[in-house]
Amino acid sequence: MNKPSFESDYNNGAHPEVLRHLMDTNGESSQSYGYDEWSESARVKIRQACECPDADVFFFAGGTQANATVIDALLRPYQAVIAVETAHINVHESGAVEASGHKVIALASHEGRMWASDLDNYLLRFFADPTWEHMAVPGMVYVTMPTEQGTIYKKEEIDAIYTVCHEHGLALYIDGARLGYGLMAEECDISLPWLANHSDAFYIGGTKMGALCGEAVVFPKGAPKGFFTHVKAHGALLAKSRVAGVQFDALFTNELYFRIANHALLMAKRLRVIFEEAGFVLKDSPTNQQFVVLGNDMVERLMQQVLFETWEPIDECHTLCRFVTSWATTEADLEALRVALTRL
Image (cartoon, rainbow, N blue to C red; front, side, top):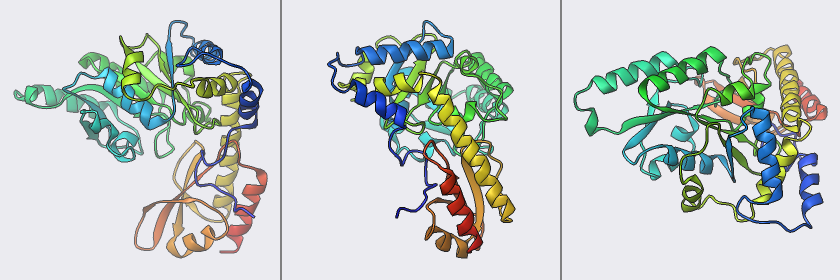
């Protein structure tokens, strides 16, 4: 029997409604390279959800592919992207951005978030240096919502970053691999239309939100000229585009995307209570990622009963561990965790 898994939100297959739409459309022929009817239907629904009728929407297979392609398209060859030190593009994307010739400039991370004041101070110092033309020039800012540490941005924080970007002529790009979980979190005051109005580009994650694979990149004010060709040049253009299009068509039908998020968040809240009632300390996280401090002697014993991920050492005796919920998390999974904790 498989162990209950809290390792990640993308180690199951597709949500049944997504899979059903794939099966229902499987026998039909379609055009390719993004011109299929389901991709276009998904674009219409995403534009409506973002309240951006003129937005350009492109589908990618995965997040690293989307990030590397979009960042390269938004930057000139001599420009760099600014992110926090814990950002996915700086840590877990194997130098994909640097491989396209763009330096990642890392600022301090505040529980995964970027502070507008840090950004502004860096840019002021950079352009005050008389030798700045000898350096990689900042051309855009990258943030994630929610962050790698499960935290979320408030309106005022994104607005402040966006204002600094405008003041210095930089674009703002938001990585939304887990966007739904951030938007539907109880503490979040940001909506999808608001986010679209306060960024130059962002992507709506599918892989971690119930799809087999796929991310939807949105340019609220229109894509850079030649972006389609740029995608092709990066090897990122899906010939069988319907694979992503059909899934996003399902995700944005009857608010499935947000229903998936709400389910995962409810499971995460109950998971948090189970740990708290058992006397464990958790980091503050309002999303589907929960971070728990476990004694090193407990980690191995608990892993024999449930699956999760070790995140980072706290000290010689304790480790921060990550537990993640998704559309596939069940009450039975949570009960198995509760029972496992009583056996430690």
